[in-house]
Image (cartoon, rainbow, N blue to C red; front, top):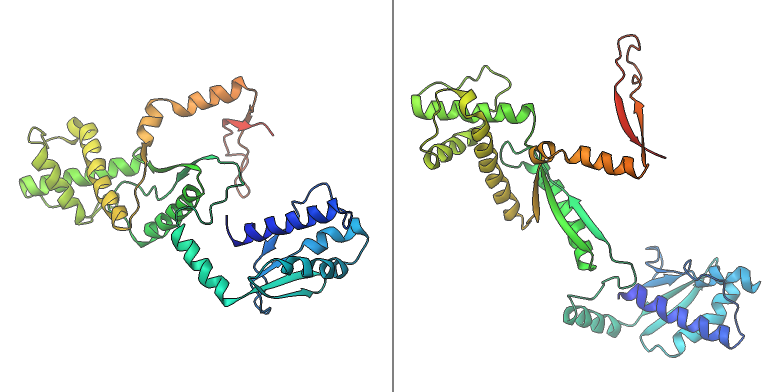
Length: 312
């Protein structure tokens, strides 16, 4: 519960009582009634549109409805210092200073539950964020997205939703091959004093790769770096693992802990996308189509590919 929900409930209870007494008519739904923060040019704390919502069904102006309500709203509420009607019929409320003192005390004493939306249906959420390629430490841009994703997740968790924070590890494709080769050449630089091939633009030149290579060499004495093809698969696993250690360390410095790190390689090898397509086909939720040439492409040279699309 928060201050807006609290006063919305008070107003709903009041108008329902007036309905029972025959003093007001109410629409079938009261969902349009809200209590919000008023515009900054008004010297008040909260504002409600209740009079505008009730105006039509009662065949009165919003101002008339508002003037009917303001005395009743204030009557049994010692916290209200001032209540007023603002065109076209908003009711603005200003609280006494003592109310805010008690409010802060209440928030402090109930900080784990105060502000939780108890009315909404609780959902299950998978929040995937950061998911930078596992080819080295994070940079400032990654951290911006990390904080945003974590804040969104934490707001949902605070409101009692079932949330899983996931990092999608993009460890499949050419960039990972190039990353693994870069670690391989750093390892040979360490072991055999070979110069790292900086002329190769596909490689990752960062010095952090030296530490990654050192860690792999130190912890894998049986790994032979004579030929890349012979160790590429194992070296990829080790390189990505070392890179993720850097990433997790960066995230922990920000106070961010993911629940799950999902490997793209595992998704591809386990044919997870194909399994989803089969399930969608079984439920008749997709149809098979072809990708048309994008705007600006030469239609004569474009090769159409068959794809699955969601049924509208």
